[in-house]
Image (cartoon, rainbow, N blue to C red; front, side, top):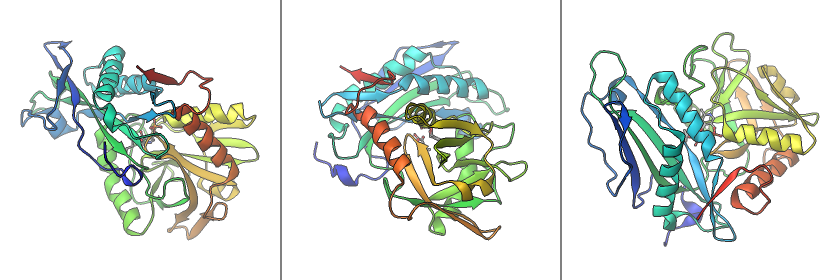
Length: 338
Ligand code: PLP
Ligand code: COI
């Protein structure tokens, strides 16, 4: 495969196969392989009108041993099941999810980027209501599909500090809404504020709690964490998407002998963090250089703004080391595809 692996960006790129499965008459049908990047669905499908859809994001990593690894894919399967329960989609069984992911990666294995390029194969499972309804009610038919594409880092800076803009005039999720689920509506709700942040030169928007605008929720498509006094601190909030990367970093921080706190994080506490980062599958870890709160006329800076701090660097190296297979997988997080 002849691709410019080091400069892929985070964009859609054609690969050879996707895998699909349809839910009809109360049951999931057979898994099918397709070479078509398009889908033909009824124009009244509930995913189109009422956002009845959920997606996931995980990656396949090629090791120095040339083997392909998945990172905690069962966590993505379980999160999709939670999303499905939340917005009344048919639940794809965990085995269906895992088998479809493995199958599509193996079918497209030539697109899993070579070890050492920093690129990975991004895997996008999608679950949509494909049956027509004009009243607001759940579809009777669903399509679950998985497609893949080789990608570089989500934030073009890669493992370099990025700047974020606090968003005070928009919420991505309501306090008792769907922020904790991976459903399309949350992302539609985030587009104008993220685009506003981009236009002003920031990597993304940082969201605050929707009730008081006092506490940090999350950063665009990634969770927030801060480091102070040998403690890893990350916000607790019902409207945050529970990140598998964040959960893994908490385990790693604990294994380094750090304290781990998941609690409300007031915006002003940013002034006390020695290091700050955004984490997620696509973002991996993005060190944060600056958080700007325009309305409050405050700027919070971390480190020298050019180099990632020491704790974040250690977390990054350990996480990616396990994902690539360079480090021993002591937590049983990876699944090697044969
Ligand atoms: N927060 C949001 C809103 C996301 O879309 C994602 C990506 O899935 C994350 C956080 C990070 O979650 P994970 O680490 O499971 O990819
Ligand atoms: C991921 O990190 O996998 C995500 O799904 C974020 C995404 C919205 C690009």
